[in-house]
Amino acid sequence: MKKNKSSVLFGAIASAAMSLGIASAQADEVEIKTQKLTDNIYVLFGRGGNIAAHVGQQGTYIIDDQFAKLAPQIKAKLKELNPDAAEFVINTHYHGDHTGGNEVFAQAGAHVIAHHNVHKRLQAEHGEDSDFLPRLSFSKDMTLHFNGEHARLQHFAHAHTDGDSVVFFDNANVVHMGDIYFNFGSLPFVDVDGGGSVDGVLAAVQTVIDAIGDDTQVIPGHGPMSNKAGLQSYHALISKAKAIMLEAIEEHKTLEAVVAADPLAQLNLEYMGWLPKERVTTLFYRSLTGEIN
Image (cartoon, rainbow, N blue to C red; front, side, top):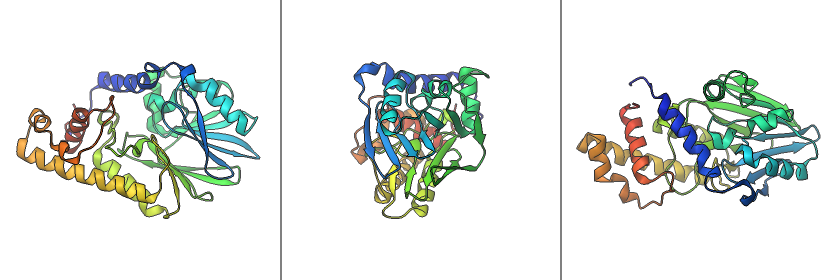
């Protein structure tokens, strides 16, 4: 595999993720909606990655925080659930639509937690002393013991990115997947320049499938709530797309020829404007061939 020298592409992807929400809608046009999952866990849907909030007698902590401009609305919604400020923010990965509020929450007293690679990438983006950076980082896993729950953070290498964490709420039977799971009935964004890979996504999803029950509530990074069956369908779709792409690569060889052949058309999927089929095809090609530059 070629070594990734593309800091420009890294910046472009991070900027694209940030502009996806902020450029397309002003903060006052975004409504933060809440869905209650258990007595202690809520999901906040807005513009960007889905936020999980764990609320209890010891306080509140959240998983991901969307964009900085949405922080006032998010904080107001959290205050409806618990008047105290958030104690912790867990980042599932480094993208701006999941970490954009880090600075605001940190300056309000929250401690940001993420994988070492999230710290590294946010440091490269914002600088050594920035409040965007996690103050607690980990390697393989860690557990947050708070509000009577033992939230297990498990790192999955080279999945959506190189710093993905899945959060398991064992007592509540809930799991937050981050952007390892895009629940749109389509294919995921594999951030190849951020250390992601198709095989890593498949491995991570399968690990979670094997670890949860049929009644486990699954929070995707984007899209509506799901469950084990939804994850299984998602895994099957990505596996089929991988097989199609490998066949196309074998037949057509070059990226240009594969894109022109449009192999993913046979899946009859709809794609988001910022992640068109051509881009998905390119990212899958680069991941499956090891061509990351």
